[in-house]
Each structure stands twice: as structure tokens, then as C-alpha cells.
Length: 173
Image (tube, rainbow, N blue to C red):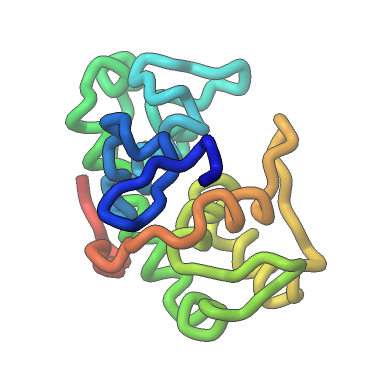
């Protein structure tokens, strides 16, 4: 028997299963946490060198869309940041509803397109740039000032179940 396997009821399991490893969900909460870690290491009070704010690194114009004008208050209010992120996902899902319908399940540049990947990419580069990427079959690919691209986000954040997010053009915080 392989020394890295443990015999248990006539089945072999990797030894790592002996440890208490948490089961990681694949739902909207897990999606939010994964994206937040990439954006700010999950820290609510972070402001990056370009002025993007909070756990999800919101731009001021995005915050203004949700009638949030006091950035100091925003940085100190985790509940508001969570609500703003959910509202933005709802708006992006509405803006990208046709592209989600037409693109999910396709493979572009070796990446399987999923709804969660599309929403993450829209968070990075905006819904318009995601449309350009999908409709150009991956030719037009936005990257931010730090080098993160829509393509990277499509891959890294693909496969989460974001069906709990309902498309809403007029989502509010």
C-alpha cells in the first residue's frame, strides 16, 4: 500500500483526510469572499494607490451610482459595503443578462465561461468591457492598472453558484 494512503474499511484515502479540513462552499458567499480576498485581502478599510475603496475596491463613481458619497463613512461600514457589492452584482447581472445567456458554457481562450466569472470580470473592468471581451471572442481584453485582466477573473472566479443574485437594473443599497 502507498505510504501516503490510509486503509479504512477496504478503501484507501489520502492522509490529508485525517485532518479537519473545512468544506468550502461554492455559493454566493464563497464567491464574495474569494473576490474580496483578491481585491483587498478581505479588509474593509483598505484604499489602494488608485483610490479604490474597501473590501471590494469600489471606485467613487460606482459608489455614487448607489448614492454613497461619504467615503470615510463607507470605509467604516462593513454592512454598507456588503450591500453595495450585492447591489452591484444585481446591476451587472441585468446589464450582462444577454451575454450571460449567450456565453455561459462556451470556451474562450481556453477558459470555460461561467456566470460567476462574468460577474467577477464585470467587477474588475465594468460590464461594458466584459461585453467587448465576450462579443469579440476574447480578442478585446481589458486589464487594470495593476495588470489584472478580465480573462484572469473569468478563470479565477468561474464556477461559483451565483443564482441567488437576481438581475435588477434598479438595485439599491
